[in-house]
Amino acid sequence: MRLAAVLLVAGVAAAAGPVEVQVRGVRLDPATGTPVVSLVERGQAARELPIWVGPFEAQAIAAEMQGVPPERPLTHDLMKTIVERLGARLDHVTISDVRDNTYFATLHLATPDGNDLSVDARPSDAIALALRLRGPILVDETIFARASQVAQVPIAAHIWGLTIQDMTPAIATFFRKSGGRGVLIADVGEDAPARDVLRGDVITALDGHDVGSVADLAEIAGGRKPTEPVTLSVRRGHRALTISFPLS
Image 1 (cartoon, rainbow, N blue to C red):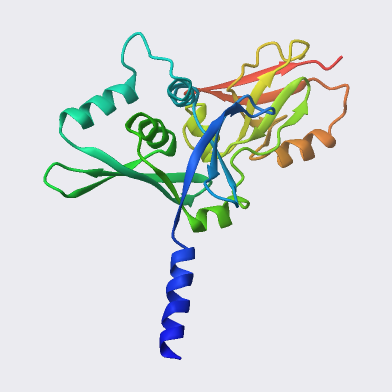
Image 2: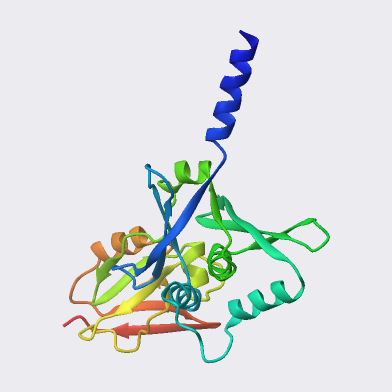
C-alpha cells in the first residue's frame, strides 16, 4: 500500500514537470500586428502556447528557423558565439513562470567545469538562443494550465477610426512604454478624423474624464453628444498632449 502511494505521488510529480515544446512558427496577431511565437508541445497532446514578442526578437527567431544567415552577427548570434567561445553549452531553456501577463524564462548553461549556470531571460531571447544552440525548450506544466487565463493581447476595439486596446505589461514592453494606466492607440485608420493622433500614443483622458481602460473610454464615449468635438489627453513618450478633433 505504501509503495503504491509512493508511485502515485511520483507519477503526479512527473506529470507536473516541464514539457518539451518546439517552435512551430511566428505569426502576426490580426488585431494589433504584434508578432506571436507559437510553441507546440511535442507528443500526442500537442498543446499550443502562444507568446507575444517584440519585432526584433520575432525577426531573429524567424530568420534562424528559415536558415537565413545575417550579413553581420545579430545580438543572438553574438550571444551564441560568446557561449561557444567560453566553452559552455546550452543544456536547456525553461519557461517556468507567468506574472502580470508576462512570461519568464531561464537559460541553463553547462559550464566547462561541469556546473550549471542559470540566467534569467525573456522568453523571446531564450527561444532565439535555443534555436541557434540547438537546445531543448521546456515549458512548466503549470504554464499550460494558466495560459488560458493570461490575456497577453486584449481584443482590440475600434472608435473614431482608431484601434485601441488596454495597456498590459506585454504591450507596454512591445511599444517601449513606461508604466501607468491608459488606453493604447494600436493603429490609426487612413480616414480617422483624429489627424494628430499617432500609433503608440496612450489615451489618459477623454473630454477631461480619466481613462484607464477600453471599458472606461467606451463608457464615457457612450454618454457624450455625437456632435461635440472629441478632446483626448494623450501621453506621447514623456510629453502630455491635448488633441481635439470634430466628428462631422
